[in-house]
Every structure is written in C-alpha cells, then in structure tokens.
Length: 274
Image (cartoon, helix red, strand yellow):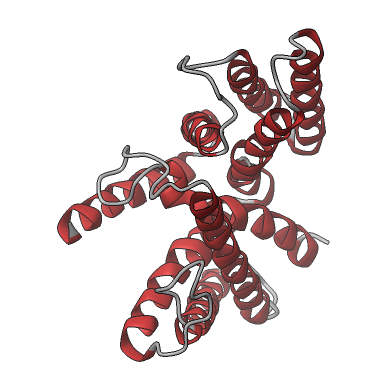
C-alpha cells in the first residue's frame, strides 16, 4: 500500500506541476476534469441523489454549471466569471427545484450548490492564480497544501503526542499541525529568497510575505482536510472514491488544495499587487 500510495502521489505531482507550468487551456482543462469528478464525488457523499438511478436531473444540471463556469473563466476573466458562474449555478438549481417540484428537497438543492462551490469554484483559483497573479505564485499552492501535509506527517510521526482532533481525525497531532505550518513557512521563505536572488522580486519584503502567505495557506489546508473528513464521517463513508490508488478519490487527495488555492490567490493580490 505504501509504494502504491507513493507512486500515485508522484504521478499526481508530475501532472500538477506540468499543468501549472503550462497554464492556459491545459491547466483549465485539467482543473475542469478534476472539478467534474470532485463534484460527482461530493454529490454522492451528500446524497443529492436519493433514487436508484445513476444520475438525476439535479446532478446533470450541476455538471453543466461546472462546464459553463470554467468556460466563462477562460473566456471572460476571473472576477466576472466567479460572479457569473455562481449566479448561473444558483439559478440552474432553482429552475430544477421549481419545475421538478416536489421531486427534490431543499436539502438536495443546497447540497448540490454546496458541492459546486466547494470543489469546482474553489479549485478554479489555481487557474486564476496562475493566469492573473503569475506563474511564480501558483507554486505557493503546492507548498501550502502538499508541502504542509508532508511536513505535518513527518513531525507528527517523530514527536506527535497530543491529539488535537481525536474524533474527527485521530492521527492528527498538535505537534504535526504546528510542524506543517512552520515547515510550509520555511519552504516559502526559501522559495522567496531564491526568487529575490533571481531578480523576480526587487523588494526584500518578499522574505516575510511569502512565508506568511504559505503559513496561512497551510492552516487553511488543514481546515480543508478536516472539513472533507467531517463530510465523510457524517455520511458514513471511508473514501470519496477509488480513482487514485492508495489515496481514494479526487476529494481525498485534493481536499487541502481546494481550500488553499483561494487563500493564496487573494493574499497574493493583497500583499504583492495591492
């Protein structure tokens, strides 16, 4: 299992780096595919479909909303696409609710809209960071999520004693969480130093801005991981899927990245372009 998980993780990392490096339509296409799968995993977990049918109209409408949102994001731009996509999805859900009444409940509508906001919209900030902030900042998403996970795991294994979320995530320790945040900040500081020496940034403020952004991103990464775990526990499932060997589904692997990406985007705009 360890080697399977490691190999899957390496392949995912290579795909993520390649897509982020390429940007543009390549990155948007990869994110769209991931978002569609993640949306489907969430609708199943949240029981948006309560029938024996594989798909219902609400799920199909949600999938269509995801595609429309990403199309707007690529063609229109970041802020306009964000607002337009959310309104479009909301109206699509309301349309389904009204014209199919009383087939769907308000809970199903809310769950479908939540799934749309949680995975597709939040994950789209990877694209927005890459295209509208810059290629050098998009790597902070990986540092704050996967880098933080690695540091937290290592520190937790070495000195982790105090369980911080014993019910929600028994394996997580206070020491591991602190190690993840500090480790992410350290990597961010080293990355900032390299960029400064390369002349990408002219101000030494980057030496504290990037560690700060990575530290905040790491905290949000843990929140995202725990939120995804909470959904699984409340709905009695172990994994969101079986797509990724050793990891589970898309939501099992990208739960932290989904939440972190939006934080990196806005903090980068505030501190580096404000």
